[in-house]
Amino acid sequence: MNSTSGSFDQVVSGLDEVLCSDDLTVLSDAERIEVLRSSGDALRRAEARVVEAIATADAAFGQRFGCRSTNELVQRALRTDSVGAARVIKASKIVRRETELTTGAPLPARWPELRQALLDGAIGVAGLLAATGPIEQAGPRIGAEDRLRADAELAAYARGRLGADAADEDSSEDAMAGAPAPTAEDLRTLAQVIVAYLDPDGAEPEHERAARSRGVRLGRAKDGLIPISGRLLPEVAGQMQRIWDAYLNPKVDGPPLPGVRFEPSEQDPDYLTSAESVAEEMPAGRTDTRSRFQLQHDALAAALGIAARHDEMPRLGGAAPTLVVSVTAQDYATGRGWAHIDGADVAAPVSLARHAACGGNIQRVLFDPEGRIIGIGSTERIFTVHQRRAITLRDKECLIPGCHVPASWCEIHHVEEHARGGPTHTDNGVTLCWHHHRTLETSGWEVRMDNGRPKVRGPGWWDPTRRWWDPRSPLRRTQLAS
Image (cartoon, rainbow, N blue to C red; front, side, top):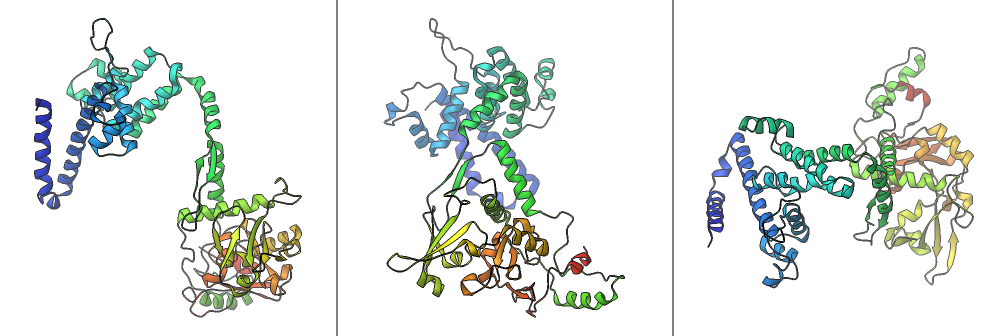
């Protein structure tokens, strides 16, 4: 056993003693953070040892031990996965020192200062890759001299120095402790700044490469969901974020959740009684329990529905892109069974077919058990542009209390279902956001029309009295106070 392996075996033995005891369970916060700090020091030095061991080996190292590649050998030796092994191998290439052909003497590493910082325990594998990644991606556009200057600057930063120049002037311990040690993300940020300075013309080629890599794909159905993955260009991601912001916070200065407080109007004494009455009827509390991720999904769904209805959307078969939902007539009548969505290899509940076509970009098709088409949701049941404008003007936003999604983002819901004789008329249409429209039958919320005006009744958990009330009276909307 060589001295290096023996020394590390002693370290491992010491760690075993610490972990097998209960000392860690009784530590104070100050002692616990010191354990984490010292463990980080040990971890970085262990990583340096692993990287240097791989960097000094030849290409056939793994094969001599029965492995197909060095990656497989590293996986087995470190008990890590393929990605972890690849990171170690990539780091070893960064610090590798080739030998001079004639004398066999070791040559300087490609990143000599960062290599030494790794060996000294100032950075680990994550920091090394973060510091060198942006500059390596720039390729030959950054010359060797500039790369070595960047190497010195990044290594000094990794050691907690304010800059390479300060380190050159004073190599004392005080200079090395001049600033807190940076994280891997801090090193990446500095490297990106250096690249922007050394390669100011590289942004356009980088954007061109990014444009070639852009894309979005839908995966295979699993657990009733379709996974989505891909890469967005920055401007597309920014637009998507703005859409989410608009959908999730459509009224920064708008009314609060209904039922919080009403203020009487001195100009309308008759309103005082009705306002106080309604305030007593309307319960307070948050009605929307969706997470941020769920809200963003529903915002994307609403945006896609708006895009499908837009006049500038390309036509398919002479009409706007229309999602087709198919279901057997028997399942539709009983409310049991499954519907099928064209373009997605996954079944959906029959409730989806029940509210299909209200928004104008979904169409329902009914089949008999033998597969014959016996019913099609016609365009006559879709609210016209003029009807939609009138309904959105009346309702202002989603009809469900506490949901402030603007009416222009909402779908128009047939209060009395079209299949049961409900007309496509402004007196039978209300605005519901994508989420509340889809969950209306199961959420406990109910909607009815009273002489052309919508009324809402909340579920028992929200309003134990289960009273009907008018959520869109213009006068009451002006009286909502924070």
